[in-house]
Image (cartoon, rainbow, N blue to C red):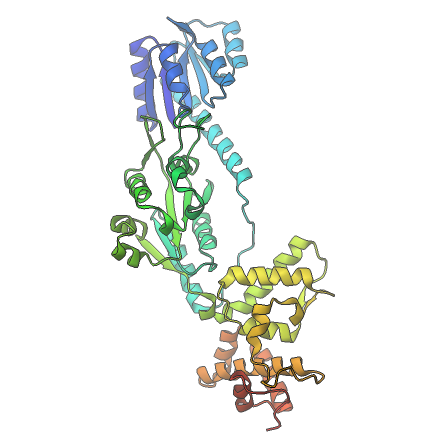
Length: 474
């Protein structure tokens, strides 16, 4: 917090300034109303300790004029001329508190701390209204690779270490960043996500560090930057690889020095912000290409967590589908559970998901809207999913026999199961785990395939794209 001490007595200014600095605040001074007004209009003063009677004016009038100018500075009035009229006038003008000389320094600092806490709560409430914070239950991963990711997040969360999260678009980097924040000592303070690629280059410095009133054309009021908004909390820099070189330099300085300077201000501000950065780009290659600062890369990647794509952790797919279905039911207010036909489920489990978890969420939410009778069928899935089921026979049109689609999908599902059994050396328990199904479900499906005469060879023929319009009899 930045404090301005306004008093015509030099000794009083020095006593108050020194006490505030010892308490950890940044401090500036003003001798009279004129000097104070020139510093207050910049908009970067959080609290002013202001004398009432000064050579060139009245402190109460100064408060009133700042409030009329919509300067969001809090005021504590400090005066030797105590009267009920003065106190009432100051509070009506917009002052937050009132103390009388001679004052107890510790008591004054206590009041300063109360105002600082109140401003922090107001700032967080303001930001909460701006940010759509998705509330969701905790999803439990079944794949060993994501369980390892969760363990790493749990290890680094209690520290203040900078974290770099990498992974393809849609893998859940933002979700992991929020998880780290929620498990940290900063969890009661703000988690502020920002997409670096969404901010115009000419506004980056102002967005990150703020600006004073009049700092540039269009700056009709002061603005706090992202670093000050996230003070004592966590700032999540998504797509950090998109920052231009000049902004990388300023970001590195802010992280290393733990201070920022608003555009148009001469006053440096101390900040206590934890940085979590994320990118889907190869920062190693960008460093080699000279498009990303090596020192910033090393600073951000003090603790590196990589999230594997969904296609490499297929055992998470079924649980993710159920998780998204349950959340969709709650969001849409559907009283009944939404289910999947066996054919639709087989397609979703066998799809490669190039868009990862984000794509899966979009597909399921779309299907929930289209589904009839609370059941998602193949027709409710988008074309990119249904095209993945295999090649239609080459003579031009699909075989128009009843049950053709069902049979195709059943054999496609069999191909996935038999392939997983081959990869696990026949270990059915491990195969079921990797497929994201229960062991009893696996046995039931194998019994069904055997009864229908679907063996490993016929399943492989289906997967290779050869005709499978009728079931194999052995």
